[in-house]
Length: 284
Image 1 (cartoon, rainbow, N blue to C red):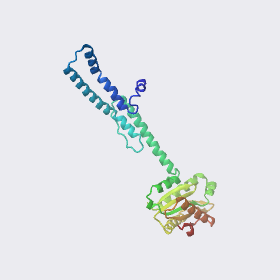
Image 2: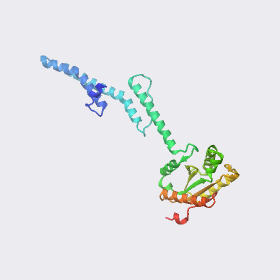
Image 3: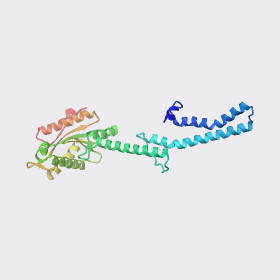
């Protein structure tokens, strides 16, 4: 470590060049010694000098090639640590310090990448229902091409969900949320996107869909839930309300606000119904 620090002034940003400089000096010591001896004695044979010089140059070139080859695993590791790089190959079991270093950093890089993937999933997925969360849905929409960011946004709320938790317990409440998420996911098309928006609220992005189509899709879900209820509280089946807003590419926050307002009107008018955002509010 001390030698490494002591020689850091030589090409401080390139270990390869630093090794080359040290190797160059070391391989030229015989030539330097011969020249010094010849100058002191006045006996320098040109043929011997040229032979020694040639051998020194060949040795230097071989040393450079060897250093480059030996350092290639370290450069591969450095590339592996970049987020967008492919996974580095595994070295054979040779047991030297490079292999030990390589194996350790490779394990650390693999573990870190796996943890980052897990965190990425956790940040965008609802752990209870297994569907996307609010952040995940917005991220999926953000990844779409501009021309595909239009359709309908629906905000859905399970009616009287607090009573489900209060009367039946939180375990039953969790079961209702999971069951509703499953049925909602099964009802929408493959290109549509669904998420648990928060609490007992869910959101759906119906891609390239008019309000009539989005309403029919949610109406079919409501009919299915009437035929096969999610559960009941005091003999009253569990239902849902929804607000739908057409999205033509304008600011997402405004569309979400209008869909939420439509949901509020559905709940204020007795729940268990769908409401569309008022036409004058969605006018461009």
